[in-house]
Image 1 (cartoon, one colour):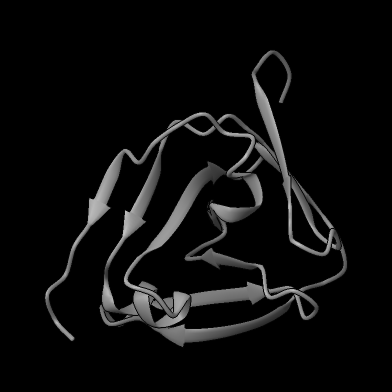
Image 2 (image 1 turned 120 degrees about the vertical axis):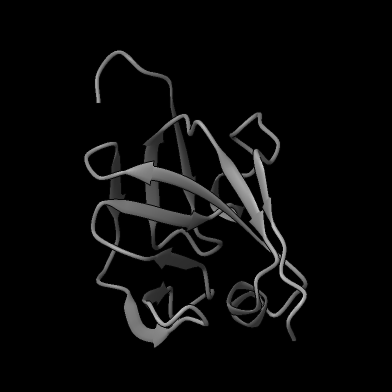
Length: 117
């Protein structure tokens, strides 16, 4: 992780921190799974590859659900403040944008839309 720009974010209560290379992209997803998980009309995520981030904090609570596409989606969250991580597999970490939103000077690179309710 040397020689790159990094950002650091934390959950609202400070129990978890993530330090990652400045992400190349973020997305705002409107799929039914993300809307259900976020409790809103969209969910904002940054993506980082395995080995490009450090994550500190206690072991988060996790739950695996079947996505609308049939793939397993692991959800993790802070028991105190509710900050969450959307991980689809071990190679790509999809983190809710909120912990780093003050630190990352970027706008969405992709929008995922779905009309199914």
